[in-house]
Image 1 (cartoon, helix red, strand yellow):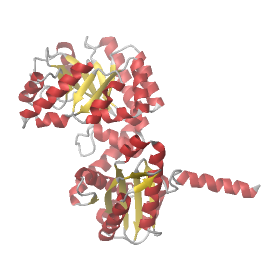
Image 2: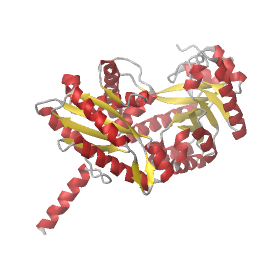
Image 3: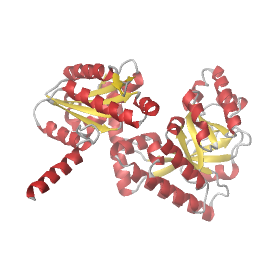
Image 4: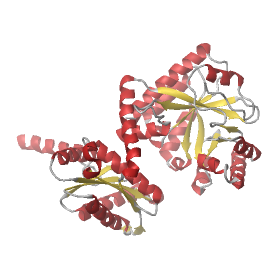
Length: 446
């Protein structure tokens, strides 16, 4: 009947604009609300909320408890924000609150009330559960004409939220002039990524991995690269973060893998004579994506240099990630853990996949430059690597002194500016692949 058809249409429209778990608005609806609010009079405030400790609850008690927690957080946010504000779930454990006719002072006050509510204990399935929250706050008054269509507000609030999360002791951060340059860079990176995907202008750069024992290039890190309009270098991590924010990570993956396939074909036909493993950093979302895994498996099956992927240790607690990595390994893809430190969770997860390489956290490596006593930490990691039957690598090596400390404590291979900056395909890269370098001798980058 006509009534049934109309009711079905209403249900479909609601499902397209609302989160199924919490009933809150989703990213589509909050973006529409921001566009509408920006055309009206009065300043608009956007609060970006990210839960602290949610993953630990999910891992310890299971997804059912995690879902119950998200539902209760949504209820508290909606109740505290009031009827005049829109509360949305952006995805995972991230939420947004849009408040019209606000100001920086009023928005920060609201953030403090929301923070207190979200941080109060929860009683779920007979358990007492606690999580925290970090809030980024921005208003149109602060961005002026740069608020755009709402994307800029979301990016600015997200930037402020990440600062709050990093600060720990200051869980609420108001967007300000100090964050403006960082925010503009993120907005520029997102725009540049859209353009690079549209015209397929993304390039690959290569960071050589050098064996400390004989100077051979034993691996190459593959880094997606482009330059923004300011001509500033944009790092691979910034590009991936921008792709995640824009929801275009699959498109980025496809383009990078296409470029990698073209490179392997060229090297197989008339390469430098040496085929070190081509390594890429991957996220948990990539490893659990059947499309990404399938493309990488097909690429690994084609003739050419070996392929490897590196993940951070914490994602190995997710069985879906482990399953994806095992599938890749079965297809001949090498596995590594990167940004590896001394956290207990890191040690506990090492046995779950057949690793070839542990890569030391660059922050630990950077500390060696001013505190050589950190070599004892490297020594512990070296013993762990030996026990696991894998090699130990270090990234971000910039001085010969640090390289020597790493070598003395059992590190097998290093990468960093001491040896070479990331290189584009060309004579210098081919010389390195064919000849290697002397132990810890700087490599010319011209």
